[in-house]
Structure formats: C-alpha cells, structure tokens
Length: 95
Ligand SMILES: [Zn+2]
Image (cartoon, rainbow, N blue to C red; front, top):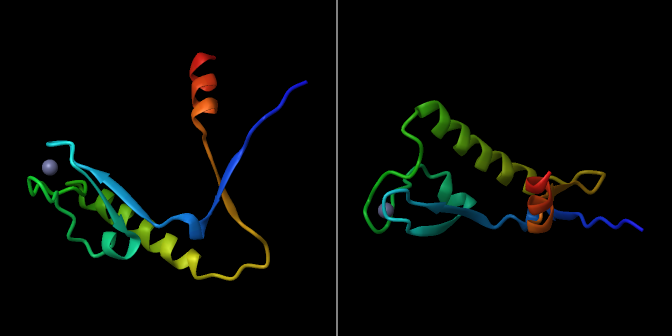
C-alpha cells in the first residue's frame, strides 16, 4: 500500500512574509500590507532587504499585491496552494 500526504493552504492562510537579512541573519515577519509599502530595511543593521535590482523588487511587491488581491476574491471554486512538506522535500532530495 502506498500513501501520499499533500498539504494545501488557502490564500487566506497567508498572513505575512518572513524576510531574513543576509548581513546579520535577523528575521522579521511583515504583513502583506506592510511588505508592499516598499520600505523594507533590516531592523537590526538597516540593510535594504529588497533586491537591488528594481525589476526583481517590483516583481516581489507585485506578487504581494496579487496575494492581497486574491484574498479578497470570492471565487466559485475553492482554490488552494499545494505546498511541499518536509517529508516530500527529503524524499525528492534522495532520488
Ligand atoms: Zn541585518
């Protein structure tokens, strides 16, 4: 017998974004609303946390805005994201 565990999250489950500074490893969690305000610097060392490339930074902000948008939708179907679990990451790494 084979069993498989799948993990799903609803868009409404996404409460925020964790950002970890590469300089000092300080992690902060921001709400989506606060993340898209564009002022994202490390609270410990004040390193800018968004990519230096403006296109990449804009893509991240657009993604956060899109998440906020879909959280407000009332679709006719339930739409969830399938996320990897630690066990599936481990088995995928062993293949
Ligand atoms: Zn830092």
